[in-house]
Amino acid sequence: MIMHPPGPTPSPFLAVPSPIAWLLLALAAFLAPPASAHPFLQNRWQVVAASNRLAMRATVTLREVAVIQGLSPEQVAQPAALLHALSNHAAYVSQHLHVSANGARLPIDVLDYSLLVEDDASGADDETPERRHAAYELGVSLPPSRSPVTLRFAHDVLKGLNFAPGIPWDVSHVLLLTDPLRNVLGEGVVRIGQDVEVSIPSTGAPSTDLATPSQPAADTPRQAQPPASPAPGASVSGFMGFLRHGLHHVATGYDHVLFLASLTLAAASWRRLLAIIGIFTLAHSLTVTLSAMGWLSLPSWIVEPVIAGSIVFVAVQNLLAPRHAAGHGRLLVAFGFGLVHGLGFAGGLADALGTASGWSLALPIVAFCLGVELAHLAIGAPMFGILKAVARPPSTEPSVPAHPARRIASILVAMGGSWFLWAALRNA
Image (cartoon, rainbow, N blue to C red; front, top):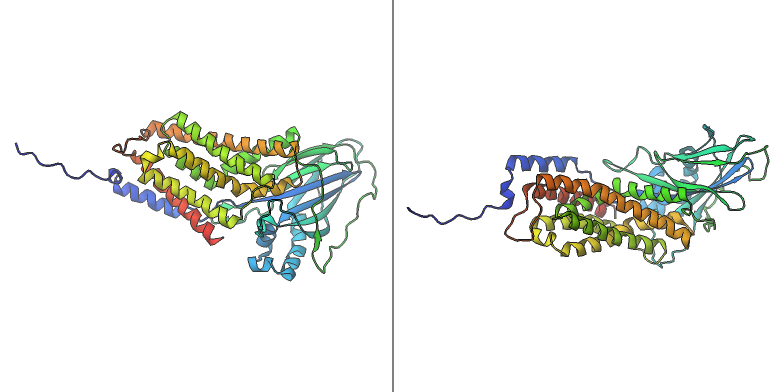
């Protein structure tokens, strides 16, 4: 019997039927949205309830103003163009912030607006529109009532507008409602589909203890310092609001989901999955905390491309170096990129918390990071369970190829990450 020498070992990629592989790749290329990593904007909504009127200050990012008013980055830097946009945006703010009393929506009066001058404790020179703000002074007249009044706060800012095809803007307002003595009456995080409801005592008879509506100044944008106020997040309702905020941040953050999928695809066991998710959350929480305390800050034009690039790196490592992806080195990769992912959201959280310090700063951060961890587990655990049922776990042995399902999934994640990277560089 003639023995023929064995032929070359087939490439593991060829183990996948080529028509199916090309179909999946084509669908991924067609459906993958060209989006940046974090289309999130953080605003503040401070409300003082006095007698029969609410005095409100809405602090909004200049990116929101630029999107609605159609400003280019160059125009944002021009005082005349920015002044005109701030004036026009006053009407948008009054129409898209919603306050209702006992179910009846109340009109909002615009009293004034100003361009905020905010000190950056970290010393970083971040002039991106997401980190610069305008403040709108608003007033709401409450109907007289001798019984407690239920107030509901909602908004539909940037609703129906996309940051990029398929990726809507996600705007949140950190709400803080106090009385004139700065006692907290209610707080929470307001976003589209997530209202905050607060009950206040009777409003009594009409009075004029608060300012009446007036026309905003039309010459130059007034430079103002952010007002000192109680910090949000110190109550049970505030804690739960930031917990939901963390959950929502991951669930709607396509970059987070893709990166988490990349990590899950190379996890060989439940123990390894939990370790990877835990260390990623630890790193994410560390930079969120440091940024919220004003100790660390990086401009978005650096952070966003690195976040998108991390998705591509991890997915490609799954494909080209599966032994290293399944080994202990993956923990270092998860920690390193977790630090950058935390910076992608930390700036907005720090701005929304305003002048918070001490326990009032710690509770929102803990709540937010806990929400992030729960969301990681809620997404990663089912994903790993499905992979474990349909595909063998990855091996640290170099001679054992990865399962075709894991290779296909890594290819799709790499393509999605490439779209994110392209959009991040385009919008840098």
